[in-house]
Image (cartoon, rainbow, N blue to C red; front, side):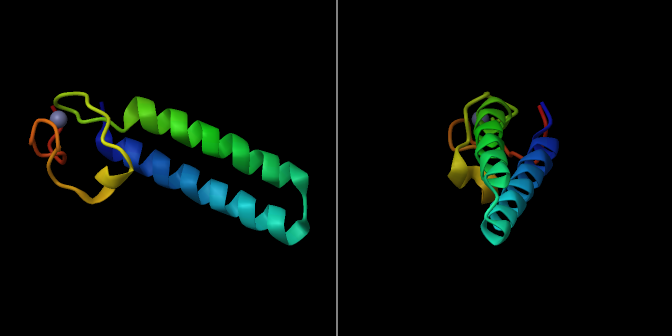
Length: 81
Ligand SMILES: [Zn+2]
């Protein structure tokens, strides 16, 4: 499990989703709105499967982005298991 890579993928998906939302709003194009919804679903499913503590495997949640220690096992999140 690579938490750093997961963080980058999640950030990339968020950026792509934001771009789709902006483009959909600017051009009033339902294709971009649909793309934004799909990206959101991908983001949620990827987050649930990959955004987990590398030590105990617990889901870190949306508040876990800035924390250093796992709230479940209190291991450091920047050190891969
Ligand atoms: Zn943990």
